Length: 301
Image (cartoon, rainbow, N blue to C red; front, side):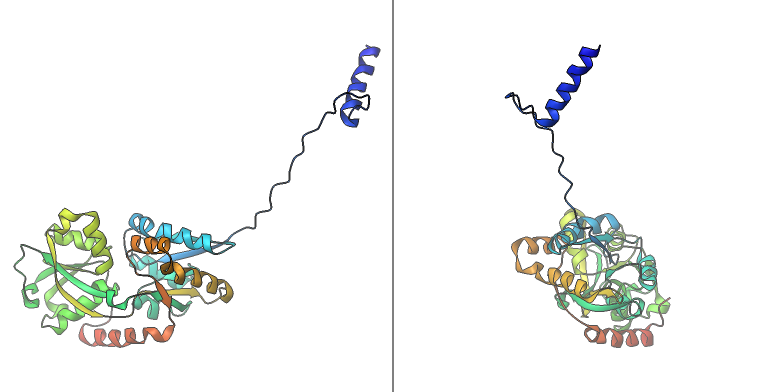
């Protein structure tokens, strides 16, 4: 036993000392310390309910991931909302770090907590579309008297407010003669028309294009009957307490998407042309429209 212990001690010494008797050296494993990864600054981006949550993630998720990759130390996390009311509550509570609200939400719901730093490009794309089934007899606004009309929500600017204001200005008493059904999303508004649940409905160009691509057979049953005037497109906003240098980095990454083929593909997937700088003054025309709306139709419920 004594001899065995001595032998074990000798082996251990050889391992530690490398055995200087001419035999092969035993190399102990080296454990590298893990690379120190700088924790990402997670910014929550809230996009208003342009589409249902699943569709919104499919269209904007890759774009958000690309911006995260372009800004060192920053991770953008997309957060959807069930409907317009929930989204507007989150804006008022300052839930998001960054937001992409519609023009009404920009000047009303978000103004206290957020500042405008950019917007979606192509204001000519921000208009209301009033659609009907191709086999419908509706041909003038008065034909909708007493009928049902679908829209995502009363605070959907292009897809409800502008169409209702257009109908009011073209001879239909919207408050008295139209049953406005708030159905929660752009897809639902279009589908209500397809299925004949309403005489007509409202949407706007990006979701209408997406619907035509995704459901061509259904879209073929519907046509655009009237279009409204335009307004400044959806805004990009940052919560007022967010570091300005950080916001500038994210803004630059968003603005540069349209300058590369890869970025253009991401924008096309989201059915938008790109992003561009803007500020609060950009949305002055929205205040004018809201005054006209209140005078013609009344306060939003």
